[in-house]
Length: 113
Length: 112
Image (cartoon, rainbow over the protein chains, first blue to last red):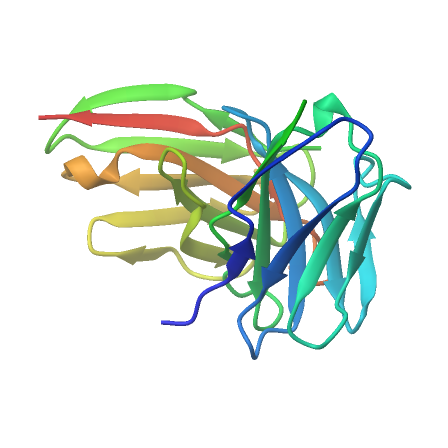
C-alpha cells in the first residue's frame, strides 16, 4: 500500500540551528501539507502546497519556515533558526485530489535543546 | 477557529457504544474524522461532505448536520482496537483549496 514517508524519524538540534525535515508524498498525489503536534496537544496546520506554490499558511508559519518541492518527489520543510518552542512532532500529509482523505506520514519528532 | 470536540475523554468497557461530537462556529463544507494512537500518525476514518449522506462502515459511522455545523462519530460495540484519540478536521471550502483544521481531540479508552 502506498504511504507517505518522512525522514528523519527523530532529530535533536541546538537552538538557533537550521533543520530540514523531509517527506516523500504518495506519487500521484497533488496536494501536500505540513502539520505539527506538540506533545499531547492537537494537530496544528502549518502550510499547504499545490502546483509548486504555497496555497495557504498559518500564523505559525512565519519567516523562519519555508517549504520546497525540489525534485518532483521530495517535499521539505525548513526551519531556519530553531527555537525551543519548535519542539514538536511534524507530520507531512498528501491528498490525491480535493475533498479526499489525507494520508499522513509517521512524523519527525523534532527536539530543540 | 478550531472545532470543539466533546467529550474530552471517555472510558468504555468493550462492547459499549460511544458518541463523539464536533462543532464549529463557522459554516463548514466538510468534516473529516481521524484516529490517532499514541506515538503514531493520524489515520483516516471518513469524510462527510456538505449535502452528502451519513457515512459508515462496520461499526463506525458518522453524521453531519450542516445547519448546526456539527458532526457526530458513532462507535458501536466498541473493540479494544478502537482506543486512541479521535480528531475531527473541518474545512470551510473544498479541502485542497482550504486547509483542514483539527479539533481538540477526544481520548477514547476501551477496557476489557
